[in-house]
Image (cartoon, rainbow, N blue to C red):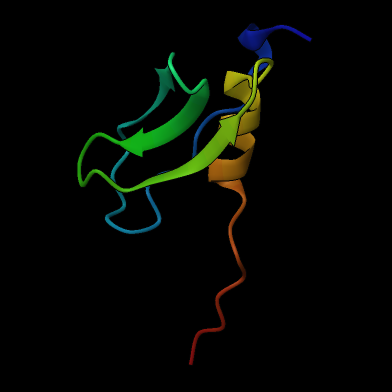
Length: 68
């Protein structure tokens, strides 16, 4: 599976921003999604073989919110 088939990222769950991006921290190695609007981060995966796809899938995983 290639990085080209990475799913589309959902908007930021905190600010609704549509500008999230995946950052790579080479010294760690970590890939993490960060909102370009409010700076919220999540979808962090670490390890030698951490992929962009894994980070996006974690970012897109949302808890169900019960609305009153």
